[in-house]
Length: 187
Image (cartoon, rainbow, N blue to C red; front, side, top):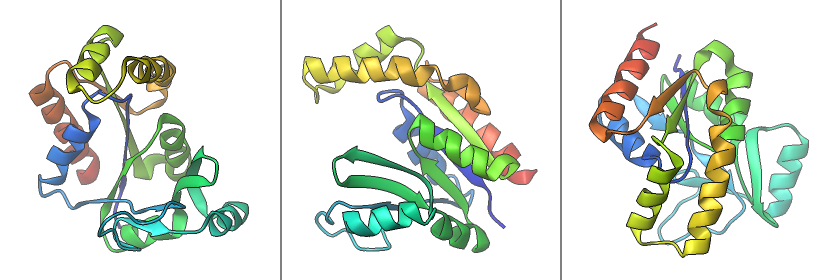
């Protein structure tokens, strides 16, 4: 039976880079496959990248209590994690990795308790986060400010996670995350 590993972090904290590294370490990790109400993009396939549902299907599954967590990002644009899919992956022996917002991370941890390890990837400071987001060169100044405002809110959730990894040095943060996950999987 697999275990669950939850990652949450403010945008620009290095979470995606750390997760990519961990996925290549031969630990039997597999991403949870989320559901969305958006249309497939490019070569995306139902049941591979996402489970594609209509907004109506999504709402009826919410009403039926089928989601571990979900969010309506824009009107009729939902993303969420189906309990049944996670159970299938766990029964197949996969250690299921979640890349979710802080509220979703707390909900999954609460549902699974000790079977889940929740990790919060934290930037060294808001100033460093601003520098990283500006350095990407992908967002307008007002978008960066929105991300920083959201980051302040998200940082308030850090104490609710099992482990906070401060990413002030990427190689150290990768090594810390790897050690924590290895220890958790071997428990």
